[in-house]
Picture: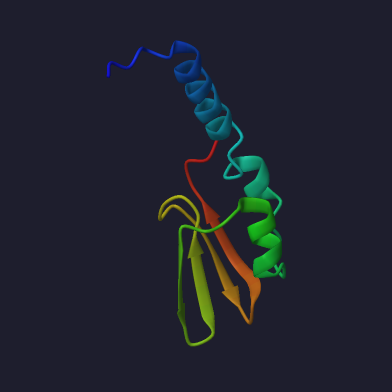
Length: 87
């Protein structure tokens, strides 16, 4: 059975993908909202789910996006943030 092209569906998928990328929570405005003392849950509410976290000796370091964007937590609270190349 031959499938016919579905241009409307393809356009809808492309537009949805573009809109989701444009609405990313990982941007300079959101990263600047972070404050020392915020909980992990507060940070996750602002930036979304982290790409990954490492934990050792009570220090938790989580990455958002890539290695240039991270937050360090001590005792479950923000201690240090770093964000390079955000727009």
